[in-house]
Figure (cartoon, rainbow, N blue to C red):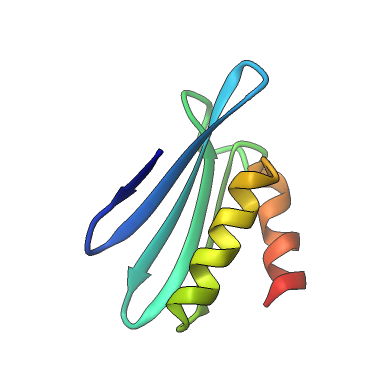
Length: 86
């Protein structure tokens, strides 16, 4: 399921017994990625990750978002994946 607004795109994926949410956020002409386990402690970096200002290219950002959701990447691994991709 993809929700779209002027500020973000969101994909929710069921992984095992939990829901992982991937958000693409557009702010100040740059895209950021947020990923978290729904209904888990957001203060724990195993459950939450925000990587800001990864690219200014919408297509590249959306491709990365879809790859992370399709691969069911957990929040704890998003930073390393973004580092390798960008």
